[in-house]
Length: 128
Image (cartoon, rainbow, N blue to C red; front, top):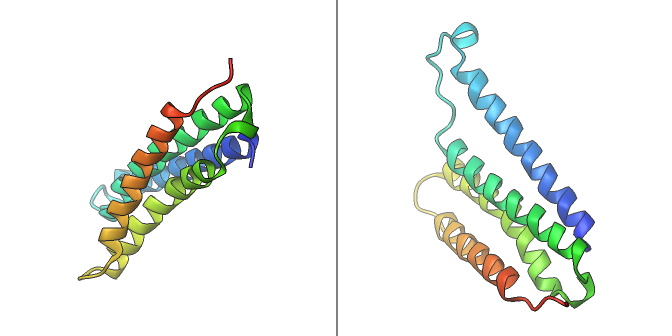
């Protein structure tokens, strides 16, 4: 997976974020629904995590394109995309399932994996 594919994934995430924001605004629209409808509660958290994950993946893809993609660890690229799409999906599933489940714990583990991605991007040696 090179930097180009990571940037495509990041831009697809930004498009998904935009679609979710558009849905939330349409639900709140006073003309269409009288302004009394409320979007699902998990939508805001899923939007925020998708936005941050997509920005990280786009920036990391740009870094890979400018540098040497061969020297970058492959697990870090896979983890970055997994966190980008995994966290919002787990947040939505946790809200849908409700009650006591392991999905909330998996959301926390995914968020910690996102921290590992950012630290890995920062600490990876770059060729001069």
